[in-house]
Image (cartoon, rainbow, N blue to C red; front, side, top):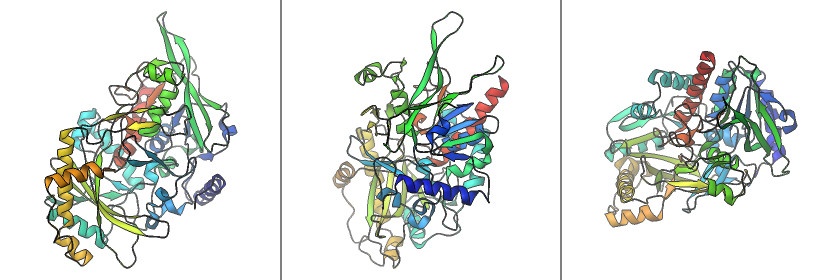
Length: 524
């Protein structure tokens, strides 16, 4: 059931036909010839969770090219409909699937989004803001952050109007496990058990980051689909007789489907004497953004030399600080009459915010077979790794190492987290739901057994981040150190994963930084 390239084009036309009667979407094309050679005020690389709100915001004043390596999600029920949640992970391929599979060198399978809307088009849709401490630590303006969250929430986020029997039992199982207090529905990241917001509406339709594009000036946005950027184009400039500077001039890209290696280029508009340059902005995610910097010649000198990539800037932080939140899953023997996939609605925030617990029902085959599971993650792991190139093909996954549980502190936190999951599994709420005391009769695992479980069954929420971290690769305005006209605005800049799930904050970041850039241009 793999969707081919031609079918994705058909889905794009379906989307355009549907949306023409509702709201104005930007012009979208998969024809690279239509974009090649053209110039724009801003070029945003990655039409995902950060890239879509960023492009929408910048388009209020400027022309924007939004380049997405994947296809349009519109018309694809596996993406748009709640009843098919999880199905994109079951139909991956090398070049065109909405979910691109990768396996870290640690041996843990993972996924990244490859579709307009990014990973937020295929994830569980759980929405919760970052903690106040996170906002303060990053140095964002509290009021600006609040306004940016609300801009997103008013357009694509919903409050669940009811809980399924599964979600209801899960919430109470967390309370029985001691994850207190019960906070009911909340957007905030607060200690205890809560019900989160979601990108699925109460009719079971997913709302996407791409749905934010009409909120800007769609006539100023061009969306190029099925195109993969392989480098940022730079030109040398000399300023006041000092050393040469490198200025981002545009991008080079290829078709994503593997049919050709021919390259194409698009450029930033050159300003008149009174104007200022726009930027190339990488919003390609924690794997994509550092990969593009490396392919462009920005990164550790020796690593670039190994791939015969001409050096633009020896920036050692590129690819460093890669981190994923160690997760553990416990499966539940829950077999309702009509099992349908269901993402998490309830979340537990425990141990002074250091542990996050959720639970869901996911498909394991396209015939509708599902499994129910509890899952927890370590919110602030000490362990981190790095990202490096595997090849110079931008369509290929880079090599990434997360070094899960490489410190004693992380292992101890994993034991504590897994013990909470085991307690929730043995709750009266779960026993009542499944109609059996099967789990309640089982003795709790020993510490040694929990350690072994942690070491042998590491999983992931796919909340990985880093590779272009603030203070190492980008400054507080998300400008890449040592070059002009290049920024990175996405989760690759994070030193930790915000909130229960990072989607809310990455969406907010696109809007927040877009407004900052507009204000910079106005002040200039």
